[in-house]
Amino acid sequence: MKFTVLSAIVATLLLGTLDALSLPGPSNNPASQFMGIKVVRIPTGPSTSALDKLKDLISKYDLDLWTTVPTINSHVDVEVPSTSYGSFMKETNGLLSQAGILEPVSIMHEDLGQSILEESAVSDEYQNQMRKAASLATPAWFNAYHPYADHLQFLSDLVTAYPSHAKIVTGGTSIQGKPITGINIFGSSGSGVKPAIIWHANVHAREWITSMTVEYMAYQLLTNYGNSTEIKGYVDKYDFYIFPIVNPDGFIYSQTTNRMWRKNRQSPPSGSSCYGRDINRNWDIHWSDTGGASTNPCDETYKGTAPFDASETRTLAAFQNAKKNSTQGVAMYIDWHSYSQMFFTPYGFDCSLSPPTELLSLAKGFTTSLKAVYGTQYTYGSSCQIIYKTTGSSDDYSYVVT
Image (cartoon, rainbow, N blue to C red; front, side, top):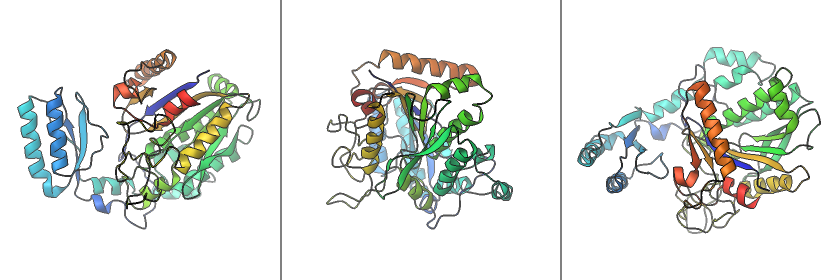
């Protein structure tokens, strides 16, 4: 029997609008290499020819993309250094005009380095508040980003506050030997007796908002268990296994050295000097197919030398398979990412395959309900059909293999 498998993408990558941000000064400033760089959003329009010309232009200037795979009728987000901004924008605007694309280019960050510094700033008021707190597991936690050690303490403090309904679990091990720490939330029957719900976040190191997102949901499940019959019903029916940071090595690197780091910190393969695997292209599902991941170790979507050659994917799969093979089984798996507002179902490896009917219905229900309450518009459907092909992804593995 298949279980529910989804992938949610939440906004945003850099979050510079929080009132108080708590991230200690890094040993190597992760903003320094981005000072003066603008991030611009360029509309792509309906023409594949115009899109190809835009991609050629971006390659000509050797610019870093935030949009993994550019597509028509969408946009491309790209970093542009100040030294080439004027000439690049002149050529870009000429290309858009020639293609009849009327939507203007917008600036997402005037100075990416400055945005990173502002994101990492710490207010005195917030520092004093957290210093005086007996526990990190309070609503104030969600006003800031935090270093890795504090995330572990937050989970520990949640367990201390709710020992009858939560415990710390380990879902795997990173390439550098760090445990992949999570929290198991369970109901009145105790741990391990109900079907599992498994959530992964911070798969990609720079997507800090995803760990905060699932920690917020963990906090809500525990703090409202005693006063919400709806939440109590969910917690009593399922065992939640929530892993806020499944890429701890990369996460730490993004906080101390390079804010935009995506992959894990695995050593380069033979013949390369580039570190890391994309651990959402390394699962043993259509890994050898072409077109859904990179074979270049320097690319952000590098899939590795073999499926599961990343410790993170190998050990997380073992944890998930053990739950699937237990008497209780697995009811749901969600992989949380940023930045966008999308809700994906399988399949990522084949765009000709229709999404599973039950998952498409669930995704539609989620996006409809979210819009009705908050007005937020999410796109839903199979990841291959909505954005681009992916191979070796955790959601496809979870649905097809597990």
